[in-house]
Image 1: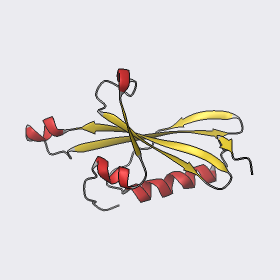
Image 2: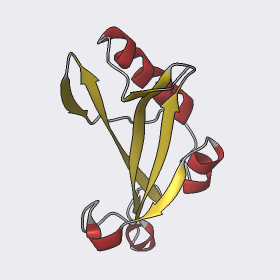
Image 3: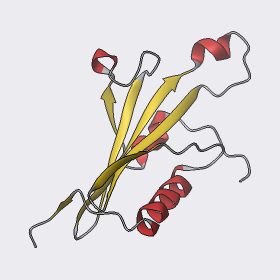
Image 4: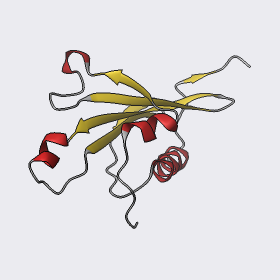
Length: 119
């Protein structure tokens, strides 16, 4: 996929992700905070992309060859009444490419909407 500039949390926020705290460590002990974005269209809510954000500054300061931040996206899809988790792993890929891939998976699996708007 090629190399991309290491992403910052602000890059995610610029793409519409909202930051939330890791209250009570629900995202895990080492996760600094989360980012989340609702993906919807004129029909309704499709899914949320939730991203665990890890601050690697301590490792960088100790000379580790690692980005200052790392991310772990996760989703839940519904298909034929079954809810399942989808935890893709992306390396050296931008946010837009990741979102395009996730939308492609949702389309190919013919997933259901979480909620439809009253239109």
